[in-house]
Image 1: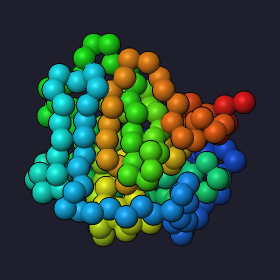
Image 2 (image 1 turned 135 degrees about the horizontal axis):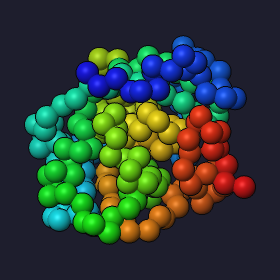
Image 3 (image 1 turned 180 degrees about the vertical axis):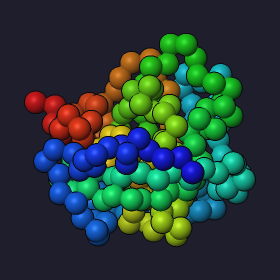
Image 4 (image 1 turned 30 degrees about the vertical axis):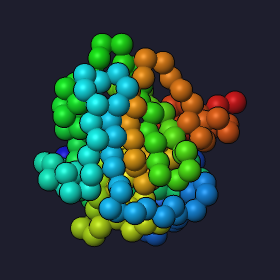
Length: 196
């Protein structure tokens, strides 16, 4: 199991946050309908070769488990989460690696064009994964199932629900919430909530 370094902090609740035992459901436009027969995860852009996986192919990839905390920009933190899924490094290996000019990632959800942006260096840390399970159970649709990105070291909006694509980019490109005033980076320990 990969242990996210934030869980080893003496104080695990970032500034301005409160701990919750529940897992609130928040999203921009509701849970999208996903036809699992047509589900695909695409890895494209500045990679050596584009990858397109159906659900069965994705399920055959090596799995990892990550223990992490989860911090929402709306000021709640849920500690001690166990995630399982596929490490993003595995996906990039399938794509033959990233091109030298790649510096950012745009994660795309199935929810009507929703995206979020990440610096490549934050994306490549070992505790980032495409999760299919949380605390031993398959992710429910309202929490991003069948698969969501999990980026434990950034605010939870960077952990794109209903993941359908990962585009490698040379330049940063604001996603849905970033275009609507959220911070381009989103570090909870620096309270990078908003971009103004």
